[in-house]
Length: 67
Image (cartoon, rainbow, N blue to C red; front, side, top):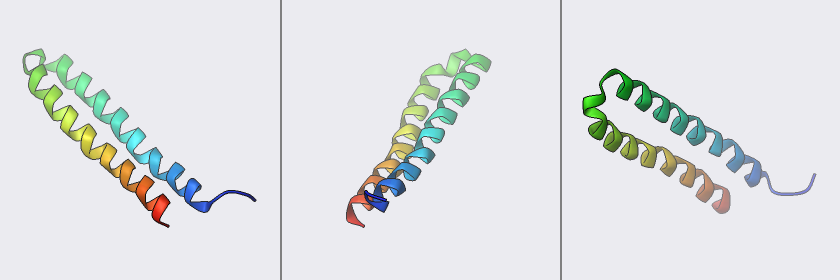
């Protein structure tokens, strides 16, 4: 087996943020469909939540390089 085990670790670490962003987007669309008048506030909250979720993916990348 060639390669680094850290590569496999990063691949597994990228699954979580991918699923998280998908769920955030789906729930944002659902909430906007239910109450279209607060779409602006929902969009702002969605962007903040996506950035926190993507930060976890970057932590997995950094951990892969360090270890």
